[in-house]
Image 1 (cartoon, helix red, strand yellow):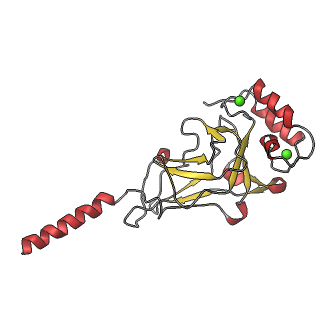
Image 2: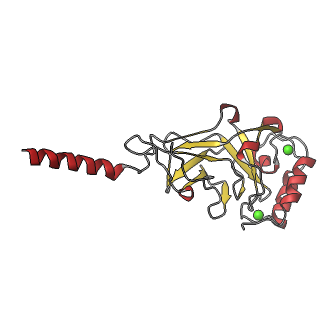
Length: 210
Ligand SMILES: [Ca+2]
Ligand SMILES: [Ca+2]
């Protein structure tokens, strides 16, 4: 009887061990600061865009849109040292394109299961109307996406900024806009495409994945 009891404990313990460290996509959470909802992040394929902590709220107001992920396993415990390259971002209709590991987390998870996205992504394209999903080893977190958008001097999203993108920029250049497609060239999110956007466009020319 005692042997059976001990065996039972061992089986239960092994079962528990088997799930330790396995991310739970429902218990884990990703958040942005409350004031960052709807903010825009300017990217370049070489990582020369802005960090999440220097995103643009409406009216070109700089806002901290750092993403914080708390990674929890199926036992409800934080996961320590989960690899940064296995946690990445995708937008809901793939309007954001990215280089290899270009949207990976800044670092592996700390002892509290926490990591961030503050560093610039290595990417292109634009994602107006889309949300941002945090992927863990290929599966998105449950609970819906984050309310952030991306745009880039790499307007056509092929991860190289060249003549094609300049041509696309000239199509949206000039004056105020209300139509979403013009967001593609409004790099500081102030609903007007003018000199400040031209400067970012120009600075991005020639960039590509490293
Ligand atoms: Ca391009
Ligand atoms: Ca602008």
